[in-house]
Length: 346
Image (cartoon, rainbow, N blue to C red; front, side, top):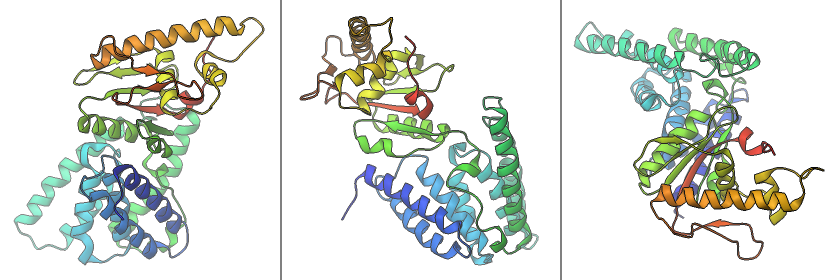
């Protein structure tokens, strides 16, 4: 039975989770490889899954191949790590491991032109790894002191140990049981996508991966309105088709995100997610008025972004009165879990 894109995306994500579970068990490398080979096939089926999914599967599968210490797999591992470095969306770690793989390949070659080629590739990959490292969230000071320690100690030690094993061709078995699906990339906290298909919101992953997939889906849907909703104090943004990112109202983004991913079937509860909880100073009449104002301004903004003035782009739900977007309006967003769960200020 063939799977649609969202089903394949979810299947790949689940396979990555299972492969990680195998990695947490002693001697789990071989079953992890079988899982990842299946995920690799799913990722490459036409239409190819958008970033970051091919890069993530390539990165995990390349690791499994390197742990086997089989020189016959070096060229394939190199190709997979090259795929994992595409667009830099996984950060610097794929580049670092690509260096290890290139070093292994170079050591197997006689002194010929191929070694010169690999030396040039070393320099390019190394410089890119430095550039990406400087742009990691905790290197830019965006994360807390606690997250900095987590990234520098847990990720650093694990990565260096793995790297040493690859360079020195040491057995990997003593390192099995460490790591996770995305944590070792050191890319930040949980984000998810929202869009016309509710299944898109089932996966949580780092911000940079969510934004990369958002951009890829925007390219595949040139008429779509895109948005990003980070947690305060960062500013949410909109993007009209073919335009640049622009600042957006938090309340308008909150409304659209909750329409695409409603957490309640009650109209009043939905309203409260947009305008805030009840309190003694703020009765339901005032809250209804604020909700209608946000609704009106959001409709106007969507008309502007989609270049459809006068269109009825937010419509009442059929039974529960929770609003819906017009069926012919495609809106896709990358959402911070913290922002989505936050309580709006009254």
